[in-house]
Length: 285
Image (tube, rainbow, N blue to C red; front, side, top):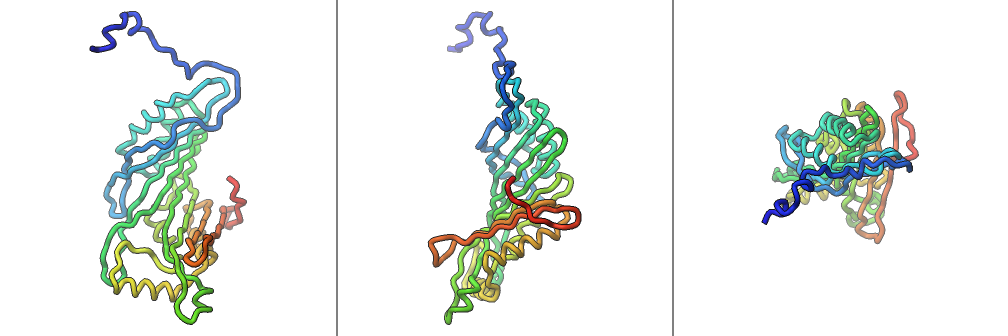
């Protein structure tokens, strides 16, 4: 039986109270909203075709000291309107611009995580398969200024120069992870495939999803000819990013999951652009 039929007419027609909008006198909240939303969004793949990616999304807004609560459902309403709009700096800017008005905030933040797949072709047998790169796209809109950040994790092979130099036979190698976080304005950006291609060139060798015996021989020998510490890799990526005019600030982390140690090896570089030069960033924010 329909439960609404049991209610008196005056109760069904009565407006519901908007408790969140209650006026109070307290303190401002920096961020309040919704997190860990599983949601599909569109993105352009390396071939220029649209594909759907499964995302985990966090969305927050600041809240004035005079308002008791934010309206959580409005975050989801606005997100749903952009379901079929391809992810891009413009899409993030448009999404945040609408969201900041709907939730009546002065500072809006959105974080979108997903796996981006790019084909990689083995060096000898030319066998192609997709490899996943973990991406986090962050947008923040304060009043009318939209600041965007792209974070991407690229796996590589690394071979130890010290081990190669000392050992009579071979050298130990391991999988490394290069995490690059770049900051840019929405009207100046670098694409995900471009960023992947820049980063993966600074390992001892790229990773491939399919390797036959001839490929494995090639990869092993290539890595042996290009030994690199985490220090070598982090410097190489940082110098390459400094060549890109779209980037105004970046952080690079290289972490090797060591094969002969219990610990990992790790290195960081933080830089920001000041005029025509790059200076060390303290990395606190």
